[in-house]
Image (cartoon, rainbow, N blue to C red):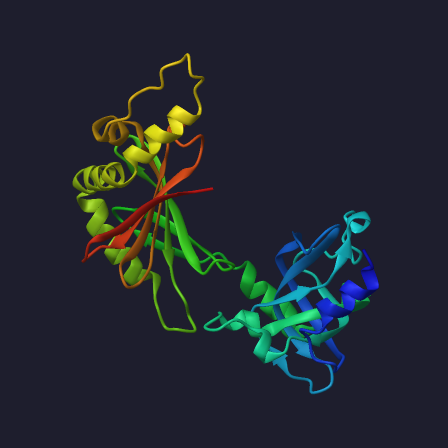
Length: 284
């Protein structure tokens, strides 16, 4: 493997112009995805940046990317820390390299080429950091208090659900004008009649997946052993809710644990509050 050759190929997605920026890193720093045999693509979220050539402050999420080798795992070359201001040199992604209908943050991707200075002071980015750290909540008498997670653009809380705890996330998007209050209103339609909804979720998932679950169980047993029969009734009884994600239009994803019928995979049910359930499938 020729690292320099692979690095040149990797960098072709970015413009030739080298920019100098001040960037404020987010909370998700240092993760890496595989980029081939012995190669990794580390990344760091940014909450905003200052273009030092124009002086413009850009208050939008973005991403720093770069290429590294297996031996670079300890710190991924640059040893970046979260919620920190850095002075860097970088190259911006070419617009044509951004996938169609991608969120705005993907147009603010940069190839990190050098960390010039660490722990830099900048009033605009410092103010952005303070804003990011503010705790924003959404309170409801019936469902409790939801807290904003800015990285995921959702409010989240844990609610009681028929003897279980269920994580609820309410999607919102300030850029598109969608509000968590709308998502909460849709969720309350479900929560008010949660016993009925729970039965419907279980029944729908069972109709879709009970046969598959039986096949998975058969594959996991020796020929001398008899795999348990998983009927739709058994399937519906065994699964248990763990999470609901719902957006401002009333579209939801409901997550149930599989009680090891799919050996630890999660069961996801898609649908709309005012419509039908669309699909049930396993993931993870």
